[in-house]
Image 1 (cartoon, rainbow, N blue to C red):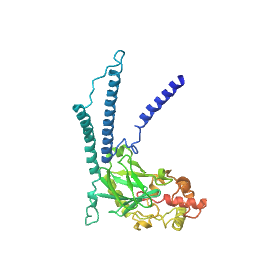
Image 2: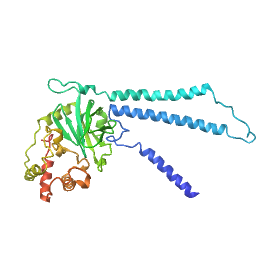
Image 3: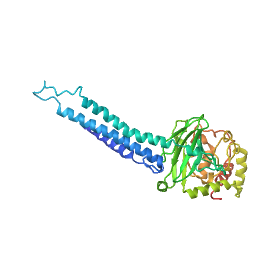
Image 4: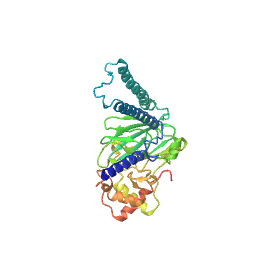
Length: 361
């Protein structure tokens, strides 16, 4: 008996902990701390549907408890039959109308939000004479296992780290290079698939106050099981004010790969050109066709917050990644594509890659 009580107590403790911990989350990652219009709409719909479900469960539970206590068989009343309600038109109307009302309460805001979030007509407007549009458009291309972000109106490209303005709609064209992936920034809005044969479109908006609370950095994920390193297909989202974003675009547009001055970096550049340049670009205005972009753009590599999306940003982890990428992201396409480098060459290549910066030039 004591063992059973102990098990039930442990089960109760774990249930309470699970309930409490399910409400925990960092502002840069949690869907329960919405950081934009889309996320807020979806959060409100989750709350609404939860309230409706809890209300229904509570009402049914009360009716069930009332029925088994009020109409339970009592001594002396074994043959007594409660009043039958079969065929009651009033009750049939009630339990038909109530579900319809509940469905309408949930369906109307859901349909409204769905059409609102699917409205991307602004991104399809013709560009102005200078080639730009009022809408900010980002082309997202998912690859095994990294992300490419292109700003087509500005001829700017980044990889692994998406930069967006706050308090402004950002429209996305989503496509995949190899297999199906799914683009998801939990704090900003729901996920959407990236396919190889069609382009999906949607928009997100990042709230400036919530962005500041999150340190202007959000985490993105691939939400589709795309291969052995699916769980490691991360990217970062850096938010900036609209003025700072315009400055960032201007800096990216005018930036050119700077010649390294450090001796090790100079030698590293030679190694890069011999081993890596056929796949990786080092200019943010990379104009190669899509099919020629086989690997992430490294123009801002020295300014990133992660290596390969998952490792700490330092030379030691960079050398670990170059030495054996398969160890960190099984199934990645970089494995075995370059010659084996000795330690001195690794130091030189790491020094060059860490020197690739745009905003700090």
